[in-house]
Length: 143
Image (cartoon, rainbow, N blue to C red):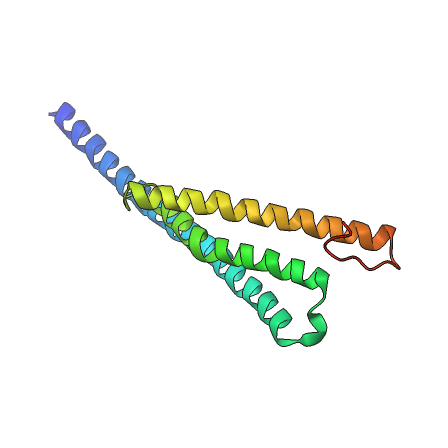
């Protein structure tokens, strides 16, 4: 009789532990989802504001700001096309949107992150030239 009761208590404890673990993992998924979605939203809003400021203010239309605007466009594209699906995968732990969309998503991730890196390289070259040759103006054929 004692064995049956202790087994019942162990099973009840296991069920309670599983329920607590499920609630804990749900809370973890919700918190991670909120944090990652906030980052993605911040990326979209911030980069959109950079692009809009350069487009709407003629004084900001310098070569350097065009590079920065190009970087903002690349990062805006990452925020719109890549990050929402990355948040979904991180929160759910699985991909159930099909192989084709997965390949498109990964390709966009690589393409847009590479574009962002190349924009940073172009900004670095522009800033290097501005520091080392401050009184010269450059055109595309000078570099």
